[in-house]
Image 1 (cartoon, rainbow, N blue to C red):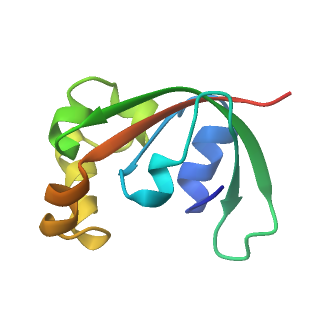
Image 2: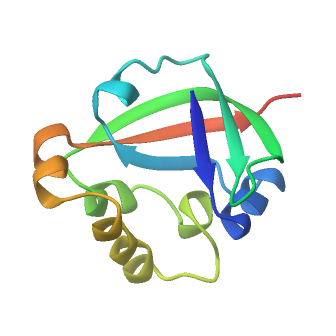
Length: 112
């Protein structure tokens, strides 16, 4: 599986600060298992990549519930507030999609 991240967030993963990725728990994410490797690509050119290993998967009804269980550093960037973080999701996912699938917190660690 691949995940595409903007440079600031990609760098948070690379330096070990970000350790959780939140996504809608659609059919693609439902295939993930603990131990799987994910390739994270740095946008926009997607040449630079990092491999992480899934350490835990946690499901939630929505992103607000998920965000209550983690620090902003684990999820995104210390430059964001929780409210700013939650405001990002309507740009990516409809309320209908969130209602249908719920969301998943993909906890990971960098591969060596």
